[in-house]
Amino acid sequence: MSTSPAPSGERRRSRERALEILYEAELKEVAFDELLEQLPVAPEPYAARLVAGIERRLGRIDDLLDAHATGWPIERMPAIDRCLLRIACYELMEEAEVPTAVIIDEAVDLAKEFSTEDSGRYVNGVLSAVAAALRPATREVAQ
Image 1 (tube, rainbow, N blue to C red):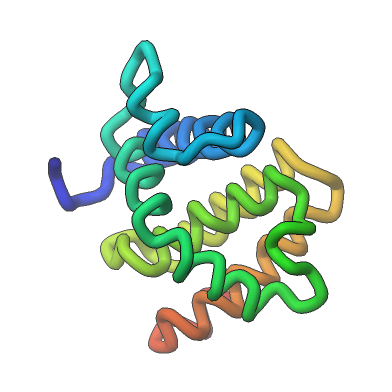
Image 2: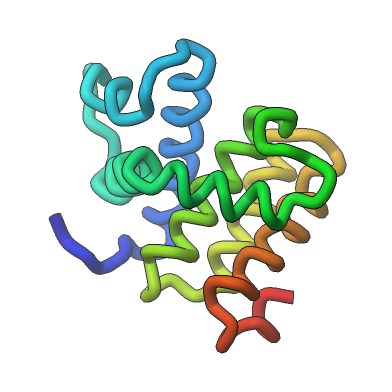
């Protein structure tokens, strides 16, 4: 499996597919990687990498989100927001080649498209705080 990220259009589609997989796994109450293995058609490589990576680092991701999502424990977040935040948090942690601003902007766009009216602002605020903790050199870009 390649370690370089997919081109930006493919990354967007991969993030959407990863969101679908994470959301479906939550609804079915199965592990993310278990659902990934059960899919009749394999997702794009970047989507599969995101899902597998989130499963592998879920404890650390959720700890980061809990620490930076003031007033909203992860289990109380809307499921779509939780899944989007996990994807972006994983990318901030593990996909150093992807710029911070791109990760946050795409998560915000997906939140606006698939979640509540206020989700874009919420996702932006949480991810800006996470990015400041994980990528302090790019703090000014994330805000």
